[in-house]
Every structure is written in structure tokens, then in C-alpha cells.
Length: 294
Image (cartoon, rainbow, N blue to C red):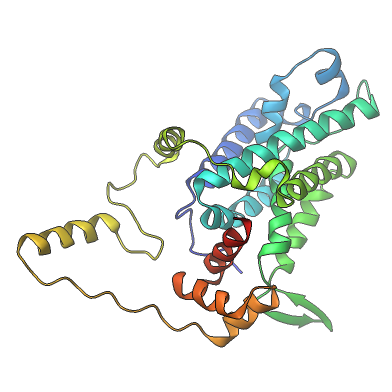
């Protein structure tokens, strides 16, 4: 289970977030400040060092936490492909802001004046992503190890458990706050799942997140180069060539339809969604979920 095509294809926001985590963790680690990034009651409530909230959102305090965290962020790029970069950006901001608020409330309740009770790193986003991972990503295969049954999602859960318990109470608390934020997003509080950034803002950030070395042509979700196709079609039109007939969508396999039906979707709707998604079950799941939320 790899979360779709390799790399950050169609996931520029996830790519930018992963790069920010790696770079800031390296910067604070070189300066020897990584272990002092965790939030504490003294820093936030008494001395009001709000910059620590921003730093703790991106920078991990140790290399093992960085490795597990980046692995999970890389896998969860699948949600940006399902939602689109605009909605995924809203999901990222909602998860980080709400989980940070829960963490600050927890600090006020603990009132620990000295210890860093909350570990540093994007625990809010990572563990918020486990909520749609649990509800929206189906198990596609099962296997047994030493008589115990596992699914292809098990490795993601094990990586999440390792990160959740990496610093015991310091990492357990932000992980739980992230899960609460993800649950609120899943419940669609305040209609958050329908919110999008305005087109002008989305265009601005799409240019910001775009790779500086990217080609001017655009890659379509199925791997074709959109710029080359459009230019080729234009040349055909100018030369009065007959239009190229598009191949009909492939007939969905019954196993894919059965999997979507087992998730609670109607069989006819599942078939149509799979045909529209050209048998990509993750994209089809997102189409059905979007239709239900309208």
C-alpha cells in the first residue's frame, strides 16, 4: 500500500510541508535547539513566546521522530490527491490550528511551570490524517504473520503508534489532540469540509507551492502531459484533421465495486464513480464522498 503514484505528483502542498519539516528540523538540530522546542506552560502562558507554536508545528525534536513523521506525511499525500490542493490546504490549516488550541488548553490544565509537556513536530496534522485514513481508505489485501491477520493498512498504523509513543506523554498528548481535530473535520463542524480558498488565493499559493524546476507543461492525473496534448489537438484543428475519438472508460471490475459497496455506497453509484475515475478506487471513493457531502 503506497498511497498512489510515487513522488509528490499532484501533491504540491504535501511536498512543501515535508520540505519545511525537514529543513527546520535540520536548522534547529544544528543549532542544538531541537530538544528545547516542545511547548510548555511557562513558554506559552507566562512568557507568551508564541513563536514556539510556529516552530513546534514543523520541527521534530529528534531524527527517529523525523523519519517516522516524514514517512507518514509522505503517505498521507493521498488525501491531497483525493480532495484537491485547495481543500487539502483547508484541512491542513484546520488540523494545525484546532490541534494547537487543544494543546494550549491542555497546557493550561496541567500548569507545569518547567517541563516541556508537548513534543515538537506536526503531530496535529499527522494524527488528524489518521481519521480519514481509518474511515475513507479501504483495506485492499490481508495476510497472516505468525497466525495473526494483518491488512495492508497495518504498517501505517504501526508507524503512527511508534510516533505516538516516541516521547511517551510528550508525544501522546499532541497525537490525541490531532485525532480530536481530525474527528471534528470528519464530522464537518461549521461545514468545514465544504470550505475552499478563493480562486485568487488558490492561484497565488499554487504558484508558491509549484516546484521551481517544474516543466511548463502540466501533467494530468492519469500521467499524460496536458500541455502537449492540448498543443497537439490545436495543430490537428488548424490542419482540419478529424478529431481523435476518446476511448470509452474501462468497465470496472466487480471486486472494486464490491469493495465500495462494503463501505456503504450504492452499487450503481460505485460503478459510475469507478468509470469516471478510470478504475482508480481512491479517486472513486473521493467522488462518492463528495457527492454525499453536497
